[in-house]
Image (cartoon, rainbow, N blue to C red; front, side, top):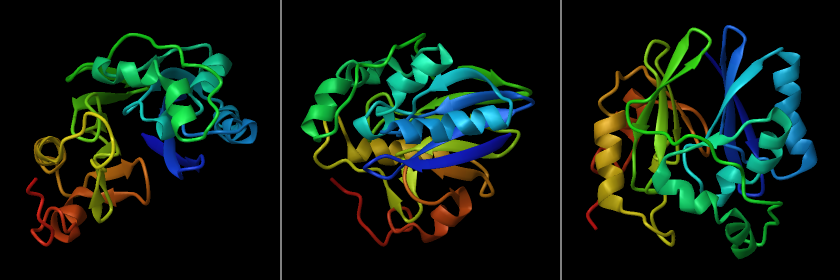
Length: 218
């Protein structure tokens, strides 16, 4: 599976086109302008990909700014965990709160659940529920390729934000990191919602929130 990143939007946020054998899943939609939407669409067209799935790791505003535009272009609805559905249904309100115009709430499709498998060509994206940063946050894991689209759970050298956001929990976030990411092989590549890609082994050793340098007690 190839994972193509796009860093877009006013809160530089990573969205991805994950593809295999001519089929693709778009994961998160940070694009905020027509030109940014076109960057994603152009890549899909140049690679001659059949977009089979629109997937959200979670529905904070920085990850759904382009969701409506991309859904309209590809003629599909976004799938996400039901615990984050209220955020997606309040996209316009979220945008107003951050001073970012949002055209409309994105269309939503069948819900995602822990253990779901999503076929993309010959690859399979497994859904891992990883709450803490958001109640319905999920990770998309391709075990065979050793690749995880990990959203805002864990970053290179840091962890997902829990201050100033609704329905967050540091304790829950740390449980998600330990149970869902640190249980994976060290060589597993992590493609986060912000910043550079990293690997499980690197974060296990160097991330100050995981190696004891920074206290995570609430």
